[in-house]
Length: 490
Ligand code: ADP
Ligand code: GLC
Image 1 (cartoon, rainbow, N blue to C red):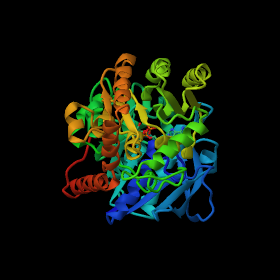
Image 2 (image 1 turned 60 degrees about the vertical axis):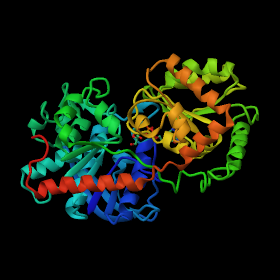
Image 3 (image 1 turned 180 degrees about the vertical axis):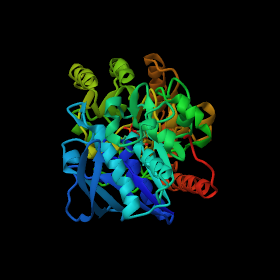
Image 4 (image 1 turned 180 degrees about the horizontal axis):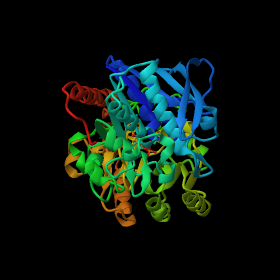
């Protein structure tokens, strides 16, 4: 199958979160299964043009303006062909989506340009069997495809739209709608209009042939008012076309056996390296080097999604229990201030790094004992999967992909040796603290702890299985077109 995979970030080029990890790994896993997958990515300033070859020029209409750009061709280290969308006016900037905590004012123009460029590549360079879109940045692609179909233009390829986070919708004032060059009737409740705004996520949900999200539980959750961020009605209407496929792990990047960022490597047969990693992390973080002090950690975007308020609320109580805590994250300035404050109050126990640091993220996964992920919602989550691989037992809230990937420690699962973590339900400091306490009790029992570590380290979340499920969704979407079945809504 020939697949054009369009996305706004991908490792090793640019990353702000898990989306980039997925876009770096899933195409390679699909290629491994024999599919011809090619990536489309904006050429941001931080991506060097060295080694990229110009393929064809772009002239894209945005409202009254014609914006020029180009498609550059390159390859990922894994050998995946990549089309970079060059447009200095829109992408030659310091950030991906914004700077200094503020989104760029012209984000709709930027990603409308990008989405039209994706369609241009399909039309002029690589006619695919299917276009795979991801999150709001590429939600307009299915809308442009639908337009081609209406105009009976050749090449109206089917689209799969993957929701990585329903909370980030790419919503813009309706006055910007003319930028898109779409007929007026697209700006309607049956189309991409949402509460009087242009909503790019909704465009993807309405116009794609098939939709999926990144775990089975999240696929159910987003059909409810609590998790749907207003779009639950749209998702319920399309529930027959909505699937859940859990993310995988790229074990060439995230495995303590091979991780080049670590001061020592280890595997389930020999955890000595993990002890060295813990000691090195304690030193690096300025914490006391105490092998038996439980070291709790978090690596996360600091947003409301991630349960930062719960962590901040229980931290003083944990410090009283003699626990050490290391956090790496960036995000909401409110949380920066809150955690900086906690670090000042408890310098011997709390280490806070408010920056993006790939290497430190790996060293924390390896050096910590317990990983905290008390998310309010979590479409899939990757860090709990990484933690398990590193023998760092996760404490998670029962939601989304966390519920689908962590096996709760109960007398039964502990006895069977399949428990991999600790899970709580109510979004409250009390419930969270009680569960961390259960984890600390288990930590003090070396036999129980080792069993849980090993169960996590041996669990298999490799991409192969998920890639096969994506391939099945591609076939389903293509098959429906061939079968002549009308797809989706209008
Ligand atoms: P999300 O995509 O919602 O942020 P995931 O758990 O899917 O959550 O993925 C987060 C990814 O981003 C992980 O690879 C994690 O290590 C990484 N990450 C998050 N914050 C930082 C940071 N400050 N420094 C380095 N890596 C980070
Ligand atoms: C989003 C979600 C996260 C998921 C990632 C990749 O950022 O918040 O749960 O793992 O996308 O799909």
